[in-house]
Structures are given as structure tokens and as C-alpha cells.
Amino acid sequence: MASGATVETVTAPKWAQKTVIIPAQRRGCHLITSKILKEIGQDLSEFKCGLAHFFLHHTSASLTINENYDSDVRDDTEKFLNRVVPEGMSAPWKHTLEGPDDMPAHIKSSMFGCSLTIPITNGKLNMGTWQGIWLCEHRDAATPRKVVVTLNGI
Image 1 (cartoon, rainbow, N blue to C red):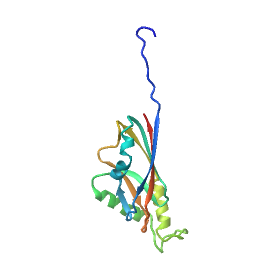
Image 2 (tube, helix red, strand yellow):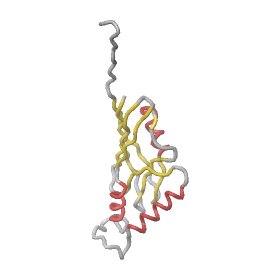
Image 3 (spheres, rainbow, N blue to C red):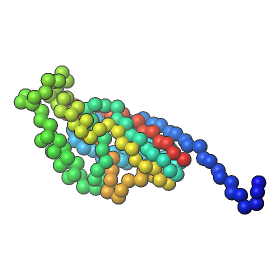
Image 4 (tube, helix red, strand yellow):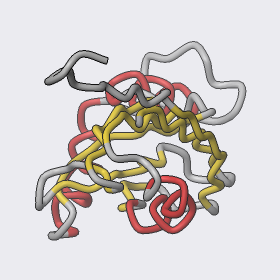
């Protein structure tokens, strides 16, 4: 090796994946950051830099990032969704096989989506101070929800 030359070390990217089960929740928006971190914390701590991808296996619930402090924000978001997407006998939806809240739940799920991507920095999710991960449950008779968390980075 020539004098003054530098040696670069290449770190191979690594992957980790885990399915987190969120117990059935009442209808509404629920802060699930601590539950997610409890399940993935050990794997997450091994990443210096990367991305965490969260994918929800359901079409009648959704994931979003929003206020992590004041629960009024979650309550107000649920009120907004129920005002924008009507349900019941007067609602215009054809798809009612699973009840009057089913089609509205699908629409609300599409509004927020079923996945999130969050940067990983020094073994932690790199979110803002007031940000948290929400599971938005759009059904009256909810079931446990599965979130697949995939971590990639170095």
C-alpha cells in the first residue's frame, strides 16, 4: 500500500423483519409507538443509519404519523374522518356485506394508507419531538392488527 493511502471499510447492509401484533382496539386513532418500539427495540438498536418500513396487513385500518402528546388530536381526527366519510343507511355505498362501517373503513384506510417509512439514526426512529405512530382503527368490531416492520441499513 502506498504511503498516505487510506483504507475504506465497506459495511454490508443488514436487514431485520418482525411482525408486531397490535391487540384489537376500539374505533379511533391510537398511539402505538411504544408498543412498536418494545417489539423492535433490540433489532433497531443495531442500526446506525437506515430505514424502518411499517406495513399494515389490513384494509379497514390505517397507519399515520401525527401528534404524540395531546390525545385530543386523535379524537378530533376520528371526528373529522366520520364527518367526511358517512356511514349508515343513508350512506351511498354498495359494499355493505360486512356491515355499515365496512366501506367507510376501506375509504378511510385509503386516505391515510397502510405503510410508513421512518429514518433510523443511531439505533432510534428519527421522528420529530411531537411525532408518534398511530394505528387508526376504522371498524366498530375490530380484530388484532398485524404490522410488518422491516429494518434496513448499516
